[in-house]
Amino acid sequence: MSIIHTEKLRKVFSNKEERTVEAVKGISLDVQQGEIFGLLGPNGAGKTTTMRMLCTLLTPTSGLASVVGFDLHTQSKEIRKRIGYVSQKGGMEIVATGRENIMLQAQLYGMSKTEAAQRVTEVIDRLRLSNFADRKVITYSGGQRRIFDLASGIIHTPELLFLDEPSTGLDPQSRARVWEEVVGLHKAGTTIFLTTHYLEEADALCHRVAIVDQGDIVALGSPAELKRQIAGDIIVMGFDAENKIEEIRNLINKYERVKETQIADTSLHVFVDKGDQALPVIIQLLNQRGITPTTIQLSRPSLDDVFLKLTGRSLRESEASAKKDR
Amino acid sequence: MRDTFLILKNELLVTLRNPFWIVRGIVQPVIYLLLFAPFLDGIANLPGFPAKSAIQFFVPGLLIMNAMFSAGFEGFSLMDKVESGFLERLRVTPVSRLALALGFVFETSVTLIIQSLILVLLSLFLGFQSNLVGIFVLLVLILLIGITMSSISFTLALFIREGGILAGIINTFVLPLMIISGVMLPLDFAPGIIQAISKFDPFTYAVSASRSLVTGVFSGGSIISAFIIFIVLAVGALVWFIRAMREAVA
Image 1 (tube, rainbow over the protein chains, first blue to last red):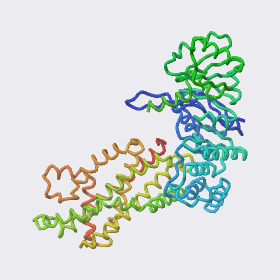
Image 2: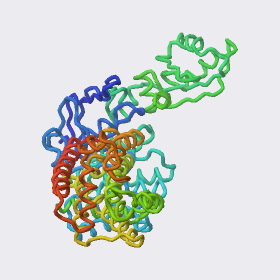
Image 3: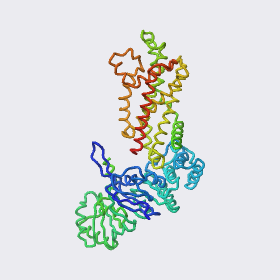
Image 4: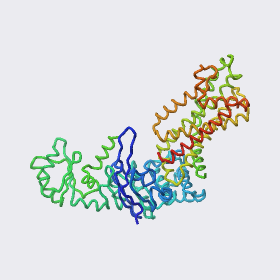
């Protein structure tokens, strides 16, 4: 059963003076009950906008959607009762304690004071937050705060939990902790819909991933399926700036085992069959012209390679240019 | 209704955790009280001065002025809530937008009443004399002004979302309204044109009503006018804010 179903969901932002921006260009997808589904893409791809529409925070410009079995346009209140949402910012009141913050949330979901207090303690214990639950949020570390954000999202045991960039800005240890809790929540029966611009996150957590770029889904499938679209292996070679990377690319393209090449910054991504056998040949080709790469890597395809292949840009590059635009 | 109370309670808790907010709110009126009111002492002897002493003249206006600005700048607290994601966290719960709006506005009302009481107490030490019932009725008027101003400020905050612009708008409109309402100096001293314009300033009636009330005069026409005007404005502004919250702008 699909817990989220959308048809050509679209959002156009228009400022009076500025140009209109089509942030989401008609996304159609189905999320099944019980899966961890991820939207992967660079900042500005429309991930958060899509999620905010599904969470009833933003009215779609056009298109249809049903969430937890209710219509997004007409039954938002029913949806709100059954979903949890943790935004990137979290939204904790910093001078209140973590417990007070989620206590308010629990009561707003209609629990009585005693019910709420009981449930809050339960969640705090389960997420191992009791050591600092009664300190003001302002004293928390980024990681502690993030887990508390999670707690606020699940206080009413939602069927479906939305996580917007759950581990952005966290140190590796805290990130591992967040992942652990997300997996725990999933095991306890919660369907999870998350956005991320971390490939590792999508790869580690998601059963299925939709790769989003410029407001559109460019690929959808399990991480393994997506990676399989790139048959063979990838050789990534770094070059000194004085080497003319375009020329090298043309040279390598002549080799029959090479299926495709892409340039990202100063490195060349070469998609090949049987990379282990192709690598020595390629090095020899380069050496004949007196070119020596500074780095060479032979790897199985990653989601970044999928993104690169589909959009012609690497995720990290898109990330950097999205920041410049701002 | 329960939700409104929950939001109100949470907001008050947050304000109490950081009493700096209440204090910061009244620093300016206290400075006026301590540094500006003495200037009026000399003027109080001039013929045509409408009160028996400077402090008696200035405090009722000061209370209205505090309500205008203290509540008028509440929009910034809502901007913080938008910025921190707090409002969004509440908006995904089934809580009604009405409850959210009322909770926020009532919190500013409670803060405003506390501020007004502090100012009255401080003034009593400086020789201000007041009728107790009058003060009570005045607090109701202050409450209405507070609801009006904070609702307008909140709504603007939702639409504008840029602190500098909000401050600019509020100062541009509220400062002249405050000055021509006769808070600082008696309107009788103003040129005819300003006196004429001041008839269109709702705060003129509030200031005038405030001055009557503290002396225990309850019959003045300005009192009834002030209440009618601000009941209408408070309801209108509140409805505007509730609708803005419903349209889910933030």
